[in-house]
Image 1 (cartoon, rainbow, N blue to C red):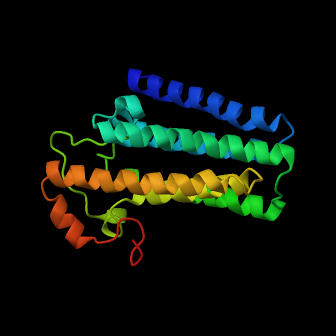
Image 2: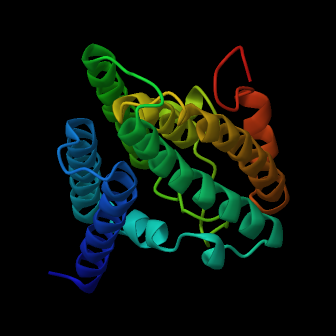
Length: 225
């Protein structure tokens, strides 16, 4: 196994442990079937996607491993990423707290439908990654990078964020919570802030990006924004 594969899979394992803590500790229960189902789906999705790109686009995996506020080069993106990380953690923790304390109630069919949307969100991100091997986890322009305007990028300029929004919006009901949608709403605002700042950076540093913005006017949803 290559060092890249070892590092990527070790990172996934550490994240799964952290995710289990954020889900089961606030709920204070190991008989939390919504938590177990979500945890398995989340981990399996990440594992399958990682294995695929380790096989077919290892450069993408290497780019995605440089992530988080500390990896960002732009000061504003460091701040944006800090807010994003806190809000993502808040989604898991508040949803688990809500379920454990019974603040709101989500029916089993709704929770299962939400799990399906979790998988849909991962599928959207997979397609975006497949279409754009330059999709780093931080805002940067690599040597030889070009504008991608095919596949999902022909529909919207930030398809990866579309998948992420679907994933995180489905997370609270999948975990049996409605209160968890509060940090989701805040996270969507932070994502909008991030992509707006990212676009300004790309317009300055990636040749052809302004022309691409004119060609594909939709940031996230065609006809909406």
